[in-house]
Length: 120
Image (cartoon, rainbow, N blue to C red; front, side):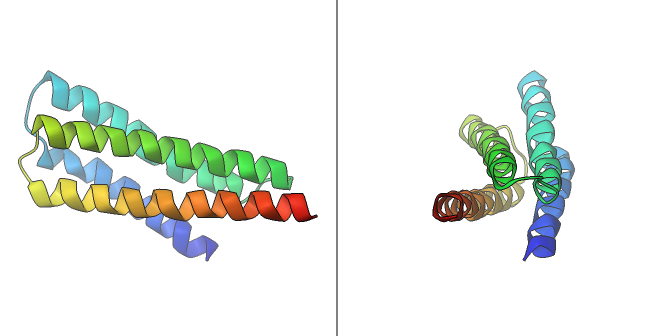
C-alpha cells in the first residue's frame, strides 16, 4: 500500500505543478499557484518522511502533517474555483477530487495509527 500512496501523492503533486496552465493570468492566480505547489509537494515529501518514522508517535505526527498540507491544498483549490481564476474547469475539478480522496485516506490512516498506538 505504501508505494501506491506515495505514487498517488507524487502524481498529485505533478498534476498540481502542471495546473499552472489551467489558471488565468494575474496576481491572485500566481499567489495561489505558488501556495498550492508548496502545500501539495510538501504532502508528498512528508509522507516520504512518515515512511521512515522512528516511532509510532513520529509516524502519527508526520501523517498529521500530510493531512494538514493536503487540507491547505484543498482550500487553495476551492478559492481558485470560487474566484473562477481558471481556464480549464476539468483540471481544477480533477485536482480537487483527488485531493479530497487523499485527505480521506490519510485521515483514516492517522486514526488507525492512533488506535494501534493506544492498544499497544
